[in-house]
Length: 599
Ligand SMILES: C[S@@+](CC[C@H](N)C(=O)[O-])C[C@H]1O[C@@H](n2cnc3c(N)ncnc32)[C@H](O)[C@@H]1O
Image (cartoon, rainbow, N blue to C red; front, top):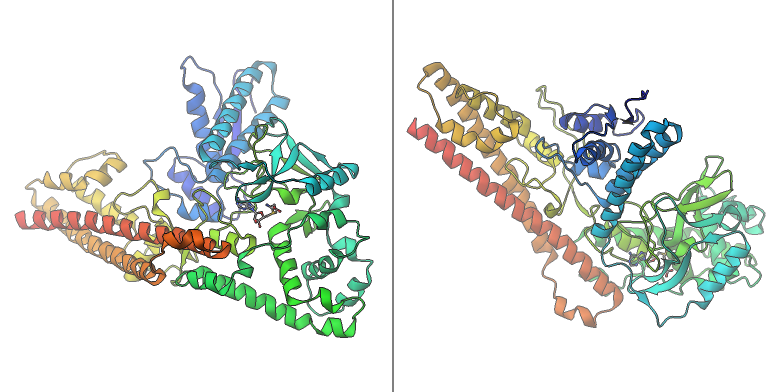
């Protein structure tokens, strides 16, 4: 509890966090426990606030990491200021705002100023995250009319919708939602009453539902999809105005032409799109024409063609949202008006999936400010570009931190029989190494779980980087150079090796360590060589992309080319980082060998 003299904020990693063990380890590596009380003492030092915020933020970031960010998180003890992703940064900062709001509502008068100061500092940081990470905001195209969209908003408002947004055409993204006035963190940009959300309840009373519910294993999503295929053409539908605003064509990866698919040769997206299409075809063939033949009045054949089925699949994949209702049930829904919001890697709205039971409505609250006239964006989820292309038909602007290349290697960590804890990652991947800050020896900008896995699987005797590191330390201690900063030791072990004493037992111990170090460095080198080979093959299989042709291509070929360019860039960065790492290792090996020869 806070005393009158001291005010504090407690940051705690929830026990139920699915990655609690890994996060505890990461917190520990930065010198924190799973529950930290941070005292807010206004001191005479001018930078006390930024120092306090730095600590709060370091802990909050780790607590807010998702699985993929955790995989790429770097445990390097030297780095204090981390940045994992715009999403993580916004979540971390917003979690601190929430904690200060809770404290403000219950704190004594004495602490109000400190807490308000902290709140304002965090809000300023949130604005900075937006300014630094939102790539060239949506450019409004003035030459498009949005009459239909405005009619939908009027219809919504007459049904209880409250909105601070208007609809406009955005360059390269279709329609989007623009702030009508300056909106702050916590403001509600849009509020949609449950009564206008399209979800499974809506169709329970229909004849169609009576037929479909008898089909073994049919999901409520498929039932809704089949209902929407027909309701789109129903002139008496309650949702006619909504259906009228939907595009005639969705242009997702699911409707890529054969030419675009060919461009994807050598990438995993080719497989992903082919599999998704095969799955949908199989699903369609299971239901049609049988349903049309047996119930032609309920399923008129002209409304249930493959093309119309594919349109509905694209509608549901690209426009539906998963919503948790007040009873705790999660349902896939179409949400008129909210369906105009585009996706951003640095979104304004991050949490919108839960019905507010008090108002029976869905609220879209801001996690970062949105200026008047600026496009207000959502996060559709932490999706890779291949997922966004397949199911939404676009590549987000900017560096997508979820763009990974999965590696088809046996994921389970090899049990080396030693007592070094295994990382327990069941699958491995890489992403653009430019996203990593740590390109030192043993890190190379590559994910540690992958490197550790490869080190272990090359040889059960081969140790993780932690073990190599201990060997380095033992050499250092043999040289009677003590109390060195760990980070310094990592960088300067070779120079310390040179300061040898002529003490024979120490020399012997050091020689043994030096031999083990050499062996580990050689193994390390092989790990990088193998990894580089994998990525060089991948680059070769992808082939060159002739971007000169791009302008004359169709939308899908352009998208395929852009995707391939991003994949090539990732693969090239991995190959380059491996090469740089190999050079560092060869350098160290040369020094080791020279040391041994010189005795
Ligand atoms: C839920 S809708 C959003 C509204 C949509 N722009 C429209 O005109 O109907 C999702 C679709 O919007 C487009 N979209 C969303 N975010 C985008 C982005 N960041 N860049 C380009 N297109 C985007 C994609 O076509 C996607 O399938």
